[in-house]
Each structure stands twice: as structure tokens, then as C-alpha cells.
Image (cartoon, rainbow over all chains, first blue to last red; front, side):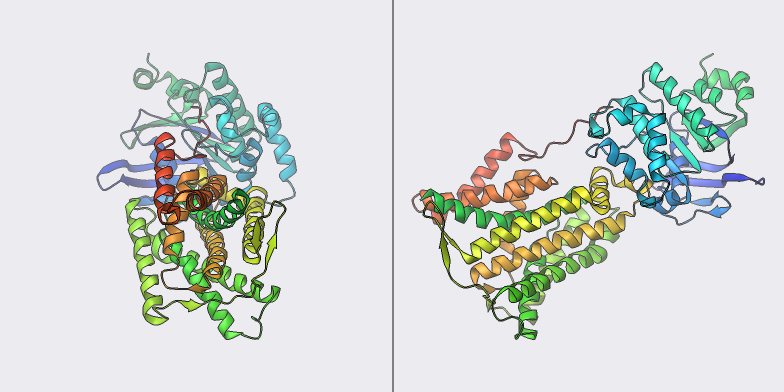
Length: 240
Length: 300
């Protein structure tokens, strides 16, 4: 493990149930300030990796470190309070809470912090539509708006590292553009990003570095631009 | 006459509604039926009885005595409910939904038998700090002091619950957990704490109902909770289990159904449970998720 890794996986094995080996000795790292993409087919273990990092799954062996701290045994709410926040697949906003209440839930662990008001404004600047819909029940938002809300909610927790699981899934291309613009902007503002995407091309264009996950193992890694030009990656993930 | 039936239906329904809230709050978060809830309210009424026996000077008549009964019952029932959750449900939370259900039935049987064997198998007289006076309402209906207290207490507790759930940080966390427990955890919410609070609040409401129910019978008994518990559970399902307003609506509807069947149908007093539950079945056939049991449409 090199110095300066914000998040690192050290030979992590993870098992679903008793049989399905979802991660088979995965090692990777995300350094402060980076956008790192994680690409791979369905069932490659991308979501498992995110769940393992966020405390939703416990690795069978190996270590997950955040800021050098072993996350073993930490429940999701503890991991989240350390500044490692997952925006899960399918967005998982709170449908019967209003948009505003969803954002307040993002700041749950920081209630009363003096900078909260400013961050509300900041999130509403990033996603103006959320401000217009602030009193509306979140379940009535469109898919794109729900994705924005899920990201805004996560940002309210003031994460150091934001993990985004399939943020573009099921969204219209124009909305995908908005989401990727926001990812770049949030990253420029200092939030490190780990991005899981089906849309490998978009992910590789947005990221500085990337890992390719195949059936639970890292099959390739390196600079995103290089992977984008790699013949085997092109064949397997970019449809070229 | 109708006005009188409305008064009677309201006060009976208020008790069902208070108990139904306990079922629905827990179900809303864990999708679990807390079958021990009926025993929690019974234990609350015994706690009130115990407190009155320990401090008889405080529990004469009047407001102070009433407050003492409610405080003892609500605190005991709330704490007991949270303790049951911690010991008997939480370790099973990640297992199939059936497992904690069986555990709840077990707790229910254990509590009933514990009181039956260690306290009494008889009805025990319950303190009656209220006078037997009745007031005549405009329209000619009579409302007893106990009925008036039941309505006032239930209303006050429902308003407090509403404010708690809608306006406080913990209440918002409860609603978030009810929507998506796992996502709430990802947002830094300690689900264990929220669930414990939910059980405490639900238990305390049950404890208040236990006092009111015992006062209306003038006594309490080891199986006091069974019937109102079963009916309140029914009320919660009728209103749409998991839905707070549904529990209140279902409780009052069931209270009215029973009272009106008893009042207007020949031999209705004997048939009132049959009639009430037949209506329940008809309502559920038409609306399987209960009257207010509709979720917000979730777009994908």
C-alpha cells in the first residue's frame, strides 16, 4: 500500500451466503482527490466491493482501510460518520420523506453543525431542481431527480470519499450528462470519488484511474485513458 | 340513541387506536408484528397497580393519582417493550421474518404465565381515582368522567406522537428507517437506537391504553391484554398497517362498529365481534392493504 491512499482494499475476499465467492482477493486503492472508476460486467463483484467498503457486508478475509484505519467490525452508520459515504445502486432515497427531509437525513449525524446551512445552499446550487421541489415527497420525483437527490443527500454528510454505484443507470442521456458534470465538479471541490459504472466509456472518461473487475478479481488497472485505448478492454467493455 | 353510541364508540375506539399505534410503529420499521404488545399493555397496567400499592398516599384520588398511574404504566411498558426488542428480536433481525414472530409469541406466553403464576390468576381491583360522575352533552348524550379522560388522553398522546414523528430529528429518522432501513444506516443513522426508541414509544402508548382499559373494567388480570390487543392489531390492519393515521382511523372505526352493532342489532351485544370482524374481512377483500395502506408511487 502506498502512502496517501484514502481507501484501500488488501486481498479482500467476500462471500455471499456460503457459496458464492463474490470477491477473490481484491486489492486496490483510491488516493485523496482522485476519481477512480471501477468497471466490469454484471456479477463481477462491483456492488459487493462497495458494500464491503460501506459496512453492509463483512469481508471473509483481507482488510479494508479508510485513512489507514481498519474498517473491520464497523456498522454502516459508523463508516458513514468517518466520511466514507455510499450512494447505493437504485438511489434508495426515502420516498415518503420530502426532498428537504431527505437532505436533512444526509446531515443526520452532523445535526447542529454551524456549516450546515451553507452546505444546504451549496447542494441546492449543484442541483437547483431539488430546491424547486423541496417540499415534494421524494417518491414522486423522476429517476434523474432521485439520483440528484441521492447524491445531494450523500453530500450533506460532508464525505471525504463518495462511492457512487451505477449513478447513470436507467437515466436519459441528457440527465447522465448532468450527473457526470456534477461528479467532476464535486471532485474539483475536494471530494474523492469511487465510481462504479456499467457505462464504462463514460466512467473511463471521467476518471483518472480505473480498475477492471472480472468475476471477483482485478483483471486490469491503470490510468483510465490508457484503459480506454486498451484493445482487450475495448473489446470486453466498450463494444468495439 | 345515536349521540350516545358515538360517545361510546369514540372512547372505545380511542383505546384501540392507542394500542394499534404500537403495532403499526413497529411494523412500519421492521415489518414485524409484535405479538407481545398485548402483554406489554397488561404489564403496564400491573406496573400502575404496583406503583399505587407502593405509594398509596400518592394514589388517592384526583389528578396526581391519575398522573402516577399513567407515568408508572407508560414508563414500565415502554421500557419493557424496548427490553423485549433488545433481548428477543434484535438478535434475530437478520433471519427470516418468521423467526422474530415466533419469538414474539413466545414472549407473550411467557409474560402471561409469569403474571399468572407469580402475581395472581385472579382479577385484581384497579385504582379508580375518577368520580363516577357523568356529564350531559348537548344532544343529550352522557359522557362519563372516564370516557372524557380516555378521549382527552388519547387525543393528547396522538398529538404528541404526531409532533414527535413529524417535527423532531428522531422522528424523521424513524420515518427514514421505515422507508429504507439500510439506506438510513448509510446516512449515519444508528438503526438500533431508532428501533429501541420506536419500541419504547409504542410500548408507552400501549401502557396508557392499559391504564384506561383497566379503569374501564375496574380491574386488571394476567390476560387483560389479549382481547384489546387482538382487536387493536385488527384495527391497525384495517387502517393499513405501518401507517400511523391508518392505525388511528382503524381504531376508531372498530370501536364504532362494535358499539353500533351492540346498540342497533337485535342481540347485537353478543354478535358485535362477529359483525366487526365480518366488516373487517369485507374491507380487506376490497382493499387488501387496508384503508390508508398505500405507498407513494416509486418511479424508477
